[in-house]
Length: 295
Image (tube, rainbow, N blue to C red; front, side):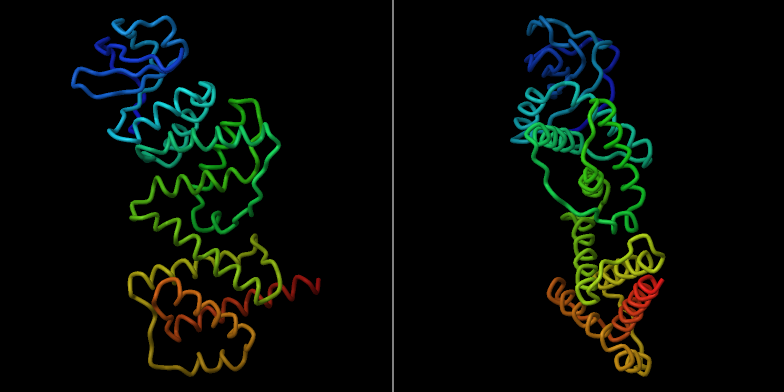
């Protein structure tokens, strides 16, 4: 479903079906089916009435097929204040990021937020982690998602759970990345699994605010990207790797676990050069945690 901001100024759109007082299905001059939204837009509107463009606040162009049916059902059932709050927040995010967020994002966010509100009314909260990796890997999307959650909360006079910034970030990543098959989200999950592996090996929870953590996250991201691009680091001198392997046995064991996971997840093995950098980063994190506990 594609979104447009305002209807054209000429009143050529004719009502096809009133979903509720605020949402109307119309057919434009070219036969394209659209969802028109505005407060009171459908009130006492007859199928043959001409719609006043000044009352149209948002226009969605419907795709053919099951997506269109789902869009009609969703927009007919979700309270208009929720639709209004979400579309306003999406508009703000588009301005912040400086790009379109795609055809399906508004619907996905409307559906998501309505589900969150229903859970909140029932006292149900889905536990999640803060996923601090998102702040490092996708700071622009994370900041935009945080602003979206804040905007929706203000518009609806409620307080969305803190974890909504995480869920909305994932929605934004799926909408703004050109990579196929959710590659951005897949990369993030793999980075997160590597972090979990390192934390398990060290027996600690990493300090997500530390510079060493940020460097580690970025290195793992670039490592995985190099793996996909088949441009891994390679060299003929193995002396540094052998030195690190024997000097930092715990960090090497953790790095070996990371290598096993990456191999199982991607079907490719890390080179010794890549593994060396993982060892170095893990050792730096271990030293940072030791220094913090000593102070």
